[in-house]
Length: 283
Image (tube, rainbow, N blue to C red; front, side):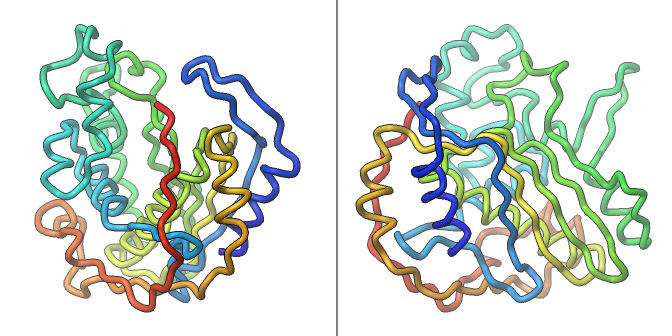
């Protein structure tokens, strides 16, 4: 919580106003933010200065790890974040690559599980990394990236958190995740949860201890219509201690994640929080 609140205050104190042509709403913006999460000691980074929810973030992560390309698949596992991007984005609705209702195209998990080579064959990035780590191999390129500029026009959205690098030091696995853009009041806690859970799951299924997750954000911003709530409400509140996350011990393999794992396999312990804050969402 301390680093989250310090980032918010830093944006307010040092950020510069940027006109956002896509949304028409100004952002108070800084470049380069670094956060880290102690997965080893199970300090789950769920915001306590407002009520936050974590299961939709985990559901979305599960969809990415399974290579989902359809909003209906995400809805089925408890995540509604792709409905608008798949069905209400005018540019995507008119895109000849769109296959119909709820289709997301070649975004996020599709790239992670089925990266298309020039010869038409596909690379499963996630399986390569899992297999290497299971065998104690770290070739300094245990990387999963969702960022494929050559196929931007084949998906409904460019990825925000786009690349994950795994590093093995002895028997401890660490993660560095890169994010190009972050709506700090609304989106950041979603992303924090996913970094934490991704490392916890990857350590579990590759037979290693989890270490730290390092989260690097390029453009961190607060929209102008979010600023009063952040400055005058959330930052005035005292945080509670971090909760911990319990993960079903029966989750042991990538196949488990692909087939039967659900958000019911993740439970929170010791979560105290202030009441919710309804930040405006800028489309």
